[in-house]
Length: 215
Image 1 (cartoon, rainbow, N blue to C red):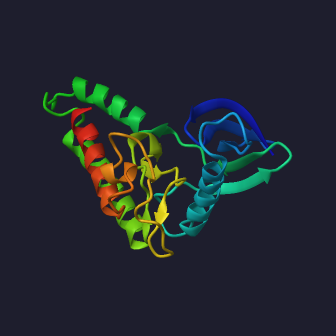
Image 2: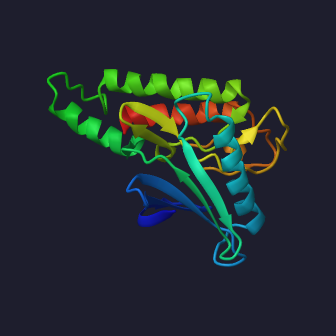
Image 3: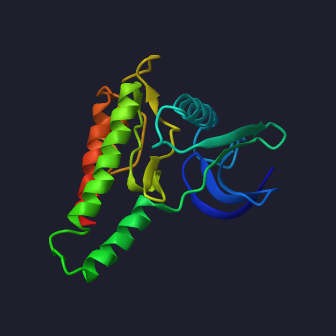
């Protein structure tokens, strides 16, 4: 049983909340509105997002430390809501970069051409590359890699939000319009004319590197 405390963020398919268990432990709970009204996203897309996220998180649970840990999930048909409980992060990549930028400004090694120090950028970059290599080794295309979907748990970077991820091994419609987040998602994610492959994630990684370099 989780008590929702404060909203951390929201997106097309639901919202994420800080929550507390009966034992006093904290977690992040993603809430999916699966009612037939009150959301511009079609019901079947919201349902698919919920199922897809569970499948991907469960599949990768023991494969890498760089993917957020799912505790449990539940669908309540009485209120047409679904929930996924996950570990609660310390901060997002966005907040970490802001803090690193302030530290860089005060550093004796300050370089006005770098938004954060080269060492900090390298540390984040190495972890991000490891995330991509692992996902693609298992045939998973994330399709929505962006700073808001990368969270820090201490020094460890983890990826979240697999709602629109694609599985190359089980087959999928390469020409469907998947969506994502501009400017981080590749152009083919917003078109039904160009096939979506793992190269879409490489585009996203490049955009994130630009963010790490220039803010």
